[in-house]
Every structure is written in C-alpha cells, then in structure tokens.
Image 1 (cartoon, rainbow, N blue to C red):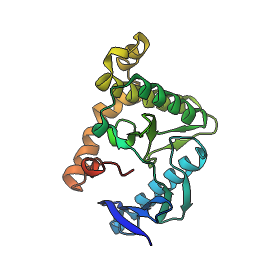
Image 2: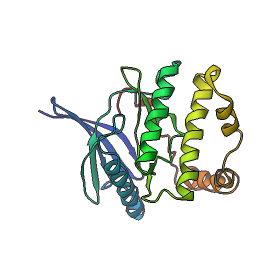
Image 3: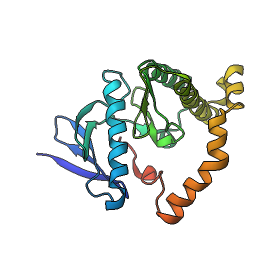
Image 4: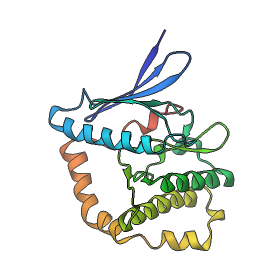
Length: 217
C-alpha cells in the first residue's frame, strides 16, 4: 500500500512524496505546470536528471530512479532543512565541504546552494544537498565551470558564517569578500529583474514551501 503527500505546488508543477512502506521516493511532475511555462519546467527537469545521473553513487545526493520529459523520480533523503536544524557543529560543515568537492570533481555545479532548504542535516549530522534543477554538468570543467564552483563554495561559507562563524578561516573570509564578477552582475543587474518578474508578474517565490518541508526532502 502506497501513501502519497503533496509537498509543493507552484507554477512549474508539483512535488510529491511517495511512501510504499519499503522505500520513499520524490516525484517532480511538470504536467500540472502552467501551459505557457511547461517548456521551462521540462528544461529544469532535464538539468536535474543530468546532474543526478552524473552524481550517481555519491552519498548525500539523491539517486535518480526514472525520468521522462514530464516527470522525474528520485530517492528520498531523510533530513532537516538547514533553516530548521540550524547546524552549530563543525563536523557538519566539514561534511558539507567534502560533499561539495565530490560534486565538483564529478563535473557538476549545484548553482542553488544559497537557499537553506537545499542543504539538509541528516540524522547522523552529515550533510546532503537536494534540488538540482539549476545544476550544470560540464565535462571539461572550464573557466565558467570554475567560477560557478567557486560561487557554490562561497554560498556554503556564507551559511557557515551564519551558524558557525567562529570556525571561519582567513581564506574563507577572503572568499566571502570577493564575489565573482558574474555574481556581482547578477546581484546588481539581473536579480532585481528576476525578483520583479517572479514575484510581481508571476506571483511566485522560489522559496515557496520552505517553511513546511520539515523532514521531507
């Protein structure tokens, strides 16, 4: 017998938790997306599928189970979102750093670690990262990839500054103070436009559902 719970519903579709008793899975379904945004929702789904496939077998990353143009099913990762768990543990951030290095070595940047709901604290205190819709896979890991990877790391260090500031190294402090040119351009030029379109025009927030995810990931 299977139990299903709707975790999130927005303009890009729905996210469901399915619990069969023996295993739990997460289904992202673009079928209910607004018709005029379905192409974009499918593009995000493709990015997530490519990212998860490249990271297969890495502990702390969901496992891709199946994917087609409208739906993606991945493994459920048990844990509390960062903003709920509020990790005050040096070991957690060491675990998160190791995980991020493994992800980057596999040729993937997450591109969405600024959002606390995407970083989980598992029961054993280790880190897991979810939501790979904006992930980017690069075989050659060229200059643009390295810039994006640096931003992944900078966002992780920003979280460390929030929850474990006493452990920040001088190198990490320097990294926090030196965002990339792309990051500065995003914050100064593109983010205001993005916020206006998503919140004022579309009435959508990309943190929707963050407050009630709890242990569901």
